[in-house]
Length: 577
Image 1 (cartoon, rainbow, N blue to C red):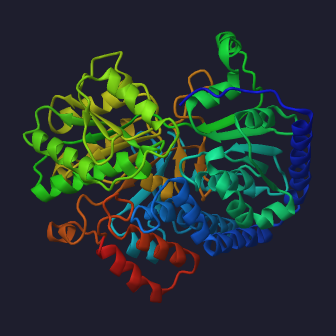
Image 2 (image 1 turned 135 degrees about the vertical axis):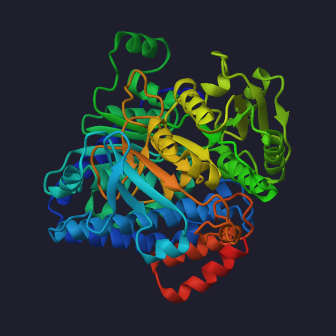
Image 3 (image 1 turned 60 degrees about the horizontal axis):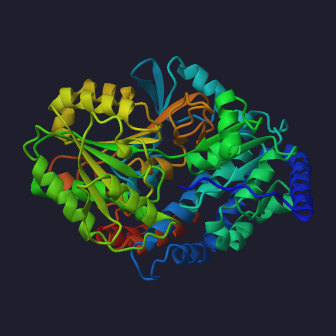
């Protein structure tokens, strides 16, 4: 993505900044006086308004992304849009209910241990409906090493343990790729951090301004949320405003660095001197180069096809414009089925439904990747879809390992070994050679996983990524409201990589390190026929799911008003996918 150019503000624009910031700073006082019970009501009101305006949201999103109204791919907008926001608001409301009662917000959750002195908490499934609708999927949040169960329980709740003590006003710089990101980031600042919020929309999402104002109406009326539009210069001006106490952004590293250090030579000089232009705290989620580690095993032809579709989905969901999209597939050069899998992957990339490369500058990024890789393959489906085979794991100049292409470009690298040896080499490669730490995926046959035993758990612990998926795309972690979402901890402004801090986290857990997501290796009914206790059919987020739009719409309506009578229609649609 190109570095933003900052333009000076006019006097009228400066007055607008002052007005918006003054309004939310005044709202901060109202927020401090808002009880936990009323905050819970506000969350329920927001969830109801998201449901009420969900069709308008999805229709607008489809127009932005140039999707036909009748395309199954519209299901992505239902699931990564209204559905995820409703689920998060309800999960937060549940945490506030327990805090308001003086109860343990982690009561009833499975708490255990993870390798390296970490504590784990099971956040998916939560309740009977998760067990039915996402059967076979599980997720845990792991703490940093050294946090025990007593500390985990004592600290859960974060700023909502003292709601009358607020912490200023945050500027949220909204993302332009997934349209639930901005609302979820606002809610995180409101509740996890107890701050008033100014949301500056990415210009791509300006058509959703009306929808967002409707769903946040109760918060806007209270004065605790303000939503504004504008370009990079508006965001930079708000970030520097004296009334803004902290900044959170989702986007590209170039945008982050322009805000923190400045642009051009002045920015380079500030970085070299360690003197950031932005002197207030900033948290961020910035993406990166995400791997898929394919552990060799003995797979059926159906396994090869399904997992090829799975990996293709991890790259092609949202046309590849996801911060956690897979970019480098790691396979064993010694795997007898390597050739079959790679060919199945080529086919899956080519046969996935056609869609435009709608995000700005996609063609430029794809052309740049192809120019640097003479062996690049245009795999079909759409002009931009590209496979980069034969990447050299030892090449320190390999751009596919250091540049987030943010588009439908997928690299392929081979490493030697089998079993635990391959897994160790692949984990080391992912940690040391790939830029960023947002998400890493492992695909492993159940019998191979059983043979690996604790070694697989240790490999997960060794991966330095904020979300790790085993037979489940890390995007499931994004959709899990009680999970954390963000980079692996430890980055700095000088070396920000995938960002600093986490979002989502509806249990309001402290000192977390990662989310670990697990899913079934096969969809139902093949899962049951092969001994996996998982009932989930092809997931609705797969790009090849033929009924994703219907399933996504039904799931959204169900989340807003859960009821047993709605389940048969959801199951029927999901099974046809």
